[in-house]
Image 1 (tube, helix red, strand yellow):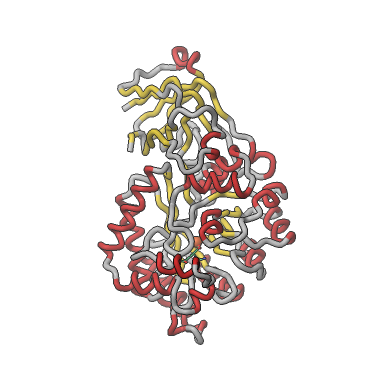
Image 2 (cartoon, rainbow, N blue to C red):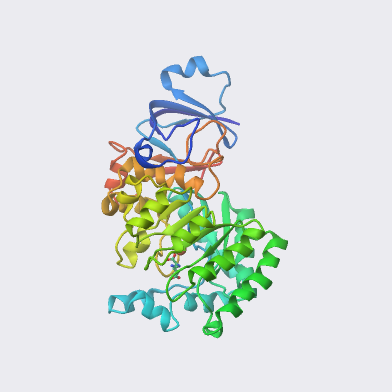
Length: 413
Ligand code: NIG
Ligand code: FE
């Protein structure tokens, strides 16, 4: 099946050779005006200017889509979510409005522990069904690849159950999924005073099952005061690295405690959150190969300071944007809102935000060969916008749905 998309007003993020974008390069977003795009089954076959279509068209399409007045972009890659969960936490949301802090709620057995109780009581089918609905919703909002973490199980059975649900989602999902093992999300109450006991459980009981059933692509740890220390993170990561799981880590959300430096020395693919960054943290990140994944909707929802994106980019670090979709700190997986927030509150240029949510985000989940740009041989996962006056209108007009349709694997979703 050959699909021709013709009369595209602007074809966005067109690249043949690419690498991770940092510094000035993040603001360069290559586009073709008045373009065509040829797709063979689920793969981008060719593209160019409409005026060159006749010369270059050696194949005759059996499907033609007219994209007059539309911008066509690669779909968003959401490289950090927790979208398998049970129940919701709007009661804590109200408690926070009344004055409790995130840490106080967690200390009272709320927060992650509250979600863990619900996940422990939920069946695989229930978890799958609710996650499936969230997955359908984020695809409609333009997400074409997603990373999903465990971390609301916190017991051998429930962590493995979550990972099996993610594996099932991978098998059935129209979009690619990466799976991350996050048993080190918080200490279960019974291990509150026996941290080593829980770490041993992770290393000696959970990791061998994960290795045997190939249940994860990455390992994650929430490294933060009151959660996992830098040394505890290192122990868990070293064990996971030995079985081939690269770290993607929650660091510098509330405190700067040396987690970022340790993550870099562990060759982490990404360090995520980064609300709290010292100048040294920014420099160290800029001088590393690790990607900084910024989660502005979590800062928004928790009323925290936003990630210092401008300083991080200007120092030369590579950044990605992700939704952090989860019931506690970002109950939304809408990447369009994330991109608007990045521009409005963190002063990223629209071009920078789009690059950070597509190409760099694809790198941050190991999918840069298949997704993140309009390139020959990549997957035809595309966003078709409604008629908009310019690309900057997309983040500017926050809260409006400006997506006309989404294409996944060459087919309209
Ligand atoms: O990425 N910070 C750690 N974990 C999640 C929130 C988890 C929760 O509150 O349920 C996050 O923000
Ligand atoms: Fe998270």
